[in-house]
Each structure stands twice: as C-alpha cells, then as structure tokens.
Image 1 (cartoon, helix red, strand yellow):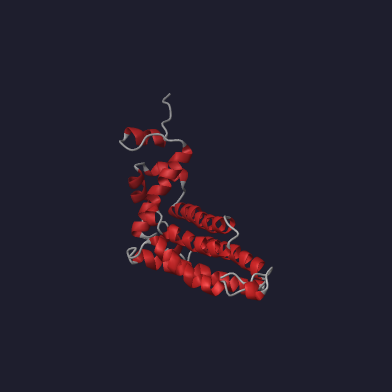
Image 2 (image 1 turned 45 degrees about the horizontal axis):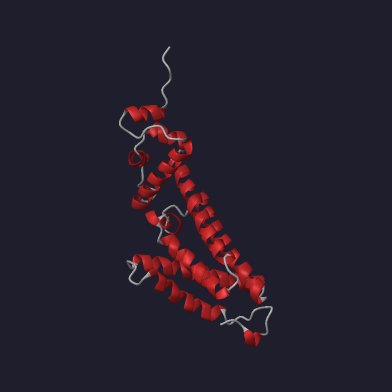
Length: 220
C-alpha cells in the first residue's frame, strides 16, 4: 500500500519550497500574502498569486488558511497588534509627557515606514466595509486612543470625555501626517517630520496643567 504524500512533500518535488515547520510556513505565507494584497488590493488578489509568490502549491496554502479572507484577517491582526504595542510602549517608556507625545507620534511614523507597507492594509484597505476588518481596525484605533486618553486624564485631571477627544486629535493627526509624509516620498527626514508634528501638538497639550501641580507650573 502506497504511503500518503503530504502537500508539502508534493511542493518540494514540484520545484516549490520544501517542508517547513508549521510556524515558519505560516510566516512565509503571510509575507507572500502581504506583498500581493499591498500591490493589488484585496479584491484583485488571488490565492493562486499568493501561492505562487510563496512558492507553494495551493493545497499547502489552504492547509494553513481556508480562504482569502482568513489570510487577510491574520495580517490585520498581526499589524494592528504591532501598532497598538508601539503606541502603548511609547507611553510606558517614560514619565516625561513631552517625550511621550514625541514617541507616540513616532510610533505612527515608524508604522507607516515599516518594510512592506503593511500600514496600507490597516489604514487604506479596500475591504474596510467588511465587518470583520472594520471591527479589528476600529478596535486598534480605540486601544491606541484609550491608552493616550488614560495618560492625559491621569496627568491633567480633565474629564474622560475631554481626554478622549484630545487623544483622538493626537492619534488622528499622527496617522494623517505620517501617511502624507510617506506619500510625499519622505521629502524631509523622518526625525524632522516627527519633531515638527510633536512641536505642534505639544504646544496644545502642554497648556493643560498637570493635575498634581498648580496651573502656573504646567509643563511646557
């Protein structure tokens, strides 16, 4: 009786990439999918294209991801988590609020400037009307906003609603400015771009006195 041959083995004998550990294969497939989705958009991307880019057979691809949407959602999860981690780590890394603002803005610039332009799947997706995609992107935005609002509210004593509005302004300005900077072909150095936006936003936020200090000694 013949021994069953796995799809990974078939891939190896057909000139495609050979057997990999499951986690490594998953990373390989996600990398290939990201390249195809960024280049073509979700709707124009095909599983055939992703399999070819990864150097595997379609059965191997389907062993890991049942469909195109599953692949896309896995990428959204990966990159929204990265963005939230960048922002929360920026806030946790110092108690100096001016530096916090600078690092939070920097997190958005680094995110859009990362290899592979993964930010386009999060901020510029042609699938934003898909409930599962919209939910993930909105959740990431909400988590970033809440982290910043928590810091603003704790340090200034403003109400939660006011802190949330300030946080939305900061995250929205950071995202839009970072995308503009990238689409303008990085016309000025990233460090300078971050410094310019930081100066603009800090001048507004620093006018709120620290809750633990008298108003006339607010940080500037």
